Image (tube, rainbow, N blue to C red; front, side, top):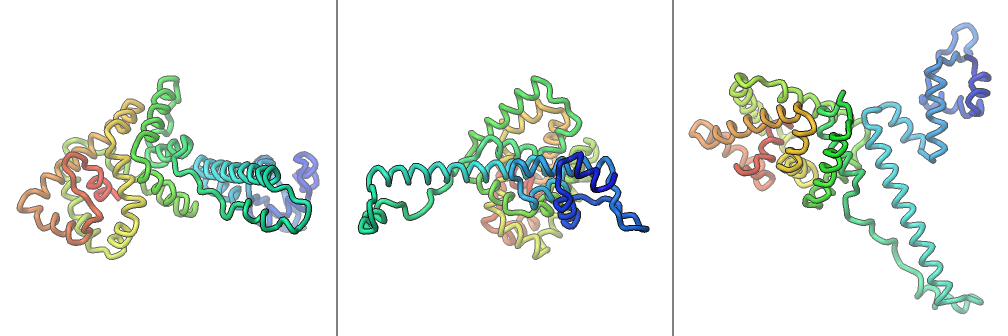
Amino acid sequence: MRIAQVSECTGIHRKTIHHYIKLGLVKPVAEQENGYYDFSAEDVHRLQLIQRLRLLDCPLSTIRDLLEHPRLSRFLLDRMIQQKKRQLEISQWQIEQLERVVRKAPLDNMEESDRLRAELPQRLPEPRAELTRQEASFLVSYFWGTFLQGLEMNEYRRYLWERLVDRLMEMHQPPLLALRDFLEDLTPQKLEIMFVENNNRVRRIMELEPENILMQVEQMAKELENKLRDAAFVRDWREHYETFFRPVSELYGDTEATRLMSQFTGRFERYGNNLLQCCSRMQAYLETPQGESLREQIRQTLGDAIALDEKNPGQLAVLLVY
């Protein structure tokens, strides 16, 4: 399909289509003989998607991220929703402040400027420090999305999902807010890499057979020794302990959240049981004379940026699998 036909059927101006091509948002084939673009049905569908996202005032940069990282679409759209809600809150606040000024300091001339200055606010209100349901839902799907793939969202699972989101809203908020802010500051490229790496780690644990648990723990111990010798890993762990590793450990260590996820899908139950087995065996190993040197290495290297708690093995779990 030629660009004139595409413009006619989509209602998008030809110059705008050329702009999208230049930005790489759509990539029609250019014929070698004459340089004319030949748009496929997929190209037209993509242009229609871009057009409808633009109607919602979605920035082209966000549209690019959505097209290049479809697995992050929920997060990217949720982030845009939160930004617009914040803009709406600020706009409403500004209207309220202007109405208050008009009521309390009606101005007839510039001689009233001192009175006006006294009535006007000096700074914007601080954003509300609370986790929204959308953000809680994203955290669950981002870290445990592997278990959701291919599952039918029946009525019971929808009920469990709402319970799971409720649970995150009930949890200690500061760590989860720190985790939210950490993820929001990452580029989509980095988020995609972390998402894939997390899925690979999950599959590795989930696919373990009971007879291979001990062998896996021995391998984890060797990997952990290497991690603690890696200056880049240690620096990353210490730098992001409060904003990423500790909050993730609280998410994984929350018994109610993991119980609900286990009811959601047996795959998570298998993963959770395998991970708990690995952590229990590793914890026991660290208490033996053979594991004492590794335990001391953890303490000396990570210091107060780790808490090896037998009752809540969340931080040990994160240390082993990340």
